[in-house]
Length: 63
Image (tube, rainbow, N blue to C red; front, side, top):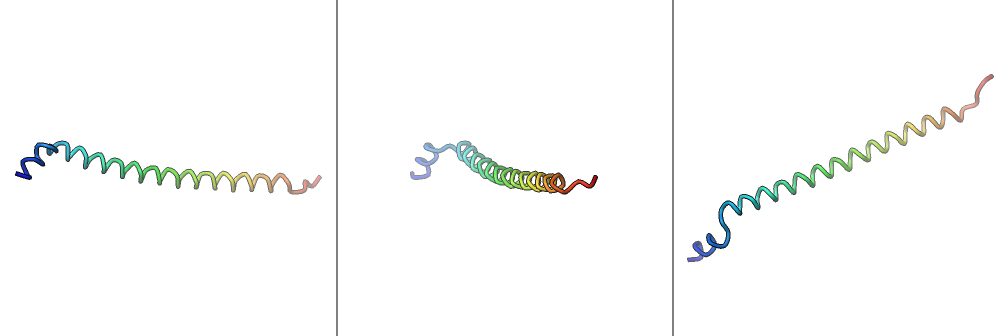
């Protein structure tokens, strides 16, 4: 009887949708983490380039 009640409460396709939803949410979390890491890497690269440019500009100019 418990199987019959459980089957009437949650249909198999609803379970599949819930599993797919959980998998997609996990994928979104992984992609968001990857995006954050790439943004940090980009920001660090920009900071290094700006620092290099600043050092080059502050060097004394020989006339």
